[in-house]
Image (cartoon, rainbow, N blue to C red; front, side, top):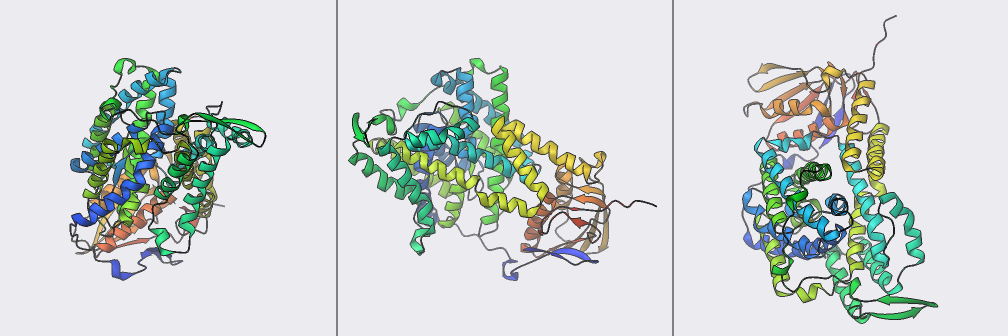
Amino acid sequence: MRLAINPGKHLHFVPEDAAVSQPATYQPDLKADLVSGFLVFLIALPLCLGIAMASNFPPVTGIVTAVVGGLVATFVGSAELTIKGPAAGLIVIALGSVQELGGGDAVLGYHRTLAIVVVAGVLQVLLSRVRAGELGDFFPSAVVHGMLAAIGVIIVSKQAHTALGIAPTSREPLSLLAEIPHSIANMNPEVALIGLLSLVLLFGIPKLPFSWAKKVPAPMVVLLVTVPLGMLLDLRHEHTYDFHFHHYKVGPQYLVQLPGSLAKSHAFPDFSYLFTWGSLKYIVMFTLVGSLESLLSAKAVDALDPQHRHSDLSRDLLATGVGNVIAGLLGGLPMISEIVRSSANINSGAKSRYANFFHGLFLLLMVALLPGLLQRIPLAALGAMLIYTGFRLAAPAEFLRVFRIGHEQLLLFVTTLLVTLATDLLIGVGAGVVLKMLLHLRHGAQLRGLFSSRIEQEELDKSTLRLRVYDAAVFTNYLSLKRRLDSIPAGVTRLVLDLERTRLVDHTVIEKLRHTADDWQRAGRRLEIIGLSAHTPLAAHELSARRKPVRVNP
């Protein structure tokens, strides 16, 4: 689907391929879901361990969360093809919570954070009951991507030291980034060999010019290589070695540590510290960021679904909330609908939510039956996997993509990124939202029109309606426009959206209207936009914001 602009006339969405206009018929296939669930399990296993350790949680807690996400959330109302489990995007919040609420005691901070996870899960359940799934459509795209890029930078800043076998002295992201050269100069060679080899495999395998390279889970290849390498280097036994005139120590502290049995891994939440300002802050952060990231992931997965199904996002938020309550009570990490594993799930041929169930079942069997195998995984390999994940969130290509949409989008992106790195996620997102609103006012939007849109409806014929929007169509009032679009009767096959009387249409609205047009087209309907010929695009990109120049009377 592309955006076509006809100067002087109107603007509409043009299908690239008319063959996709009719939705495919869904056919359940448990065999396909079983195979996909197993392949996703291979990817999820090391990531769950790595995310838990990066969050300062016991390693097995990441698997506990994925098991709950698979065996419980699947049947509560999870979106069809999403994979529920711990996500790299929440590492920053979880780690900060453990450190701040524990006051230096990691065990105490872990138990107090579990209480935060439970309460955040309850709030997510309540939000789902008031149909808060729509919140995924509120936040500006550039701000969301800036937040994710900041999370990526923070992950890299922390895990680079783990991959090199060094314990950093800093705790803040910017300081950790500045300390990376020192860790490189003082790296533990044997541990760094595992970390660097893992990075070569993770970045290199997808680039290979072979069809099989696209199907092989790179994280599993990393384990197949680094576990034997760790055994060769005898990481299970503490010893010293000399390299290049320096003395180094290695031992089991560089391997995953698990309790003797799954039952011993259970920990109870500590609710005694719940009503402090620190706890309330992290409750808000877990609830807001976790819900937003989960909703955005579910929407992205819907866009990739070959069957073009649409998830009930509020129902999916309910599944996430219930899963978080149970995971927190069992000592696990917070969960979301995770985009990387969900994308792998689709690419592996999953047909329904049972793929999520099977992925959780395989993880449970692995921890219950083969815990000794997990304890041979080098931490440097897990650190490398998280570096790869963080790099993908904050890749240079993402900066270029945002820049092409418009200079102001890049300003929003970078502002959210830098403020988040300097402070925290809530302040970073808040700064991005406030800046976006100020830019809208600068471009002619009126304050009274920022949060509500005035819309008039006119029937052109029995199958055609016109919606005329006034003032501005921007992210802050998009929800009211979306509700009006969703309320259009099924008998209306053509909708004309007249934006001539708007002063500003921002990038977020243009992007979401494109997705809406995709949905209408698949249903055999047409969404057409008119009235933007007098608006000036803020960039050459087809999805850039558009504003109407202010006319000055002589």
